[in-house]
Length: 169
View 1 (spheres, rainbow, N blue to C red):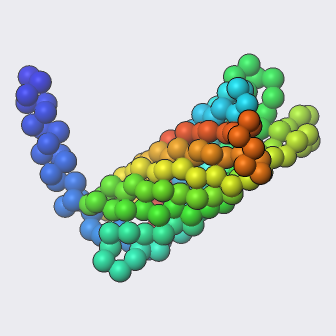
View 2: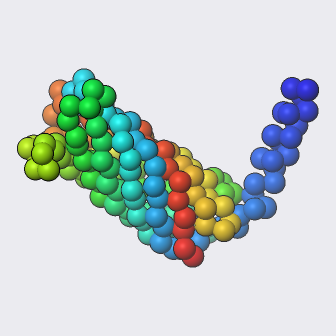
């Protein structure tokens, strides 16, 4: 039974390139979840994103400038935060699957009673992995690392985002 399941999985992988041609230029929207940690404080929440995809000649690479916003709560529910990203992903395409590095600038806002009580911002880097079907459906994950306020190594923020989306071609 396990061997049969493994064969089905291999057949599915072999069929994936046929489901998608080269990546296409277009505008995409995503919705997902985020789990983050900064200064020993963990938070989780929802994430919204938008990007524009520009395919490079040959169809194996694309450049994706993007914006993302998340609304998060600390694990104990005591504080709310928002982390906003503006950056660019460099995607390497293998059939419908993409992966690659990303660079961004973020602004993390601490919220209390509807007011911003603190803002920290700085550069960051990370990686992205995803799948985009021929019809525009997208599923992916990204790891945001090295986010820090003016490269302060004591107060680094790391986050994992998992998302579903759609791209208009």
